[in-house]
Length: 358
Ligand code: G3I
Image (cartoon, rainbow, N blue to C red; front, side, top):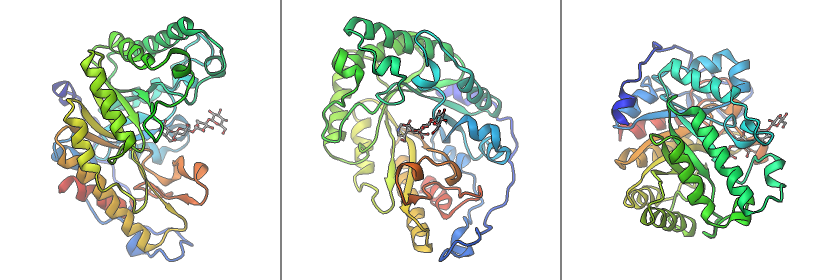
């Protein structure tokens, strides 16, 4: 796997772009505090730290409409890995039963291939972003198993051998108290749906790394323990599982103090981990102090991955505030990413570089 990745060819020379131009009207934020100062490159730094990549999520509308955004994303000294933010989800790939559309996902895979970047797939089975023909189907147990297996097999089969080396096969199985989350798969099939989905994924592409992803598992607690128990159980029964994705949608100043210890607890089970959806949101407006805290927080997260041998990499859930999912979900919050709305590096970027250097 690692030798395969090492053969990927880096096609792009280092792109250059301006850093440090302050946004107008940014209140208490000064030009000096606004700008990143590091000249190091984030993916280069990740690899120097022994990681496979530093990466970003991306989505087709942004790629289509914003050439500057795409050029920065395509610089493989900055980003060595891409995740599709929405393009490979169930509602995007099988909007009608048996009718598969891979157009948007294929665009992102082709971009990663052209850039010499690793792809992580995201995601084949999740309780959200399901078309109504799945979520409201009323399918019986046997029918939904067949529908789920067909979806997993077809999507993963389509991308087999196309650099889709990592897959978030299953997303967000747990409630915060560690019980299994209610969704149409759990309600209809029961907990074995996780086994069946993982087995279908492994059969469709034996070389893909299979991950289960969740949020609020980044520090010790009931949900993290439930993930440990699930992975232990899966491995004891020979169900394929290769990694745990720590989504890492954090709130400024609230990075779990047990983050590294929790990563180590996961890798002690014989799986790898990755930070798969990192962002660190603040209550707006930005201030110099908030940007400084965000720099510290990014460094804390990246340092934890650097310190854990089997943490393979860090992915931000969009590299820029311009296209973050956060403001539309959390009113009054945002600016969660290491590049700002003008596609300029923030102090958080320096935190990332420092984290890979620790
Ligand atoms: O595709 C429709 C489009 O047709 C329509 O015109 C438009 C109108 O609002 O909506 C579009 O769908 C949106 C979709 O993103 C694609 O852009 C949905 O409204 C919107 O809710 C959806 O948000 C995504 C969210 O998952 C949905 O749960 C975010 O972009 C995406 O960043 C977010 O990502 C998730 C991970 O997959 C799993 N972990 C948590 C993370 C953050 O919620």
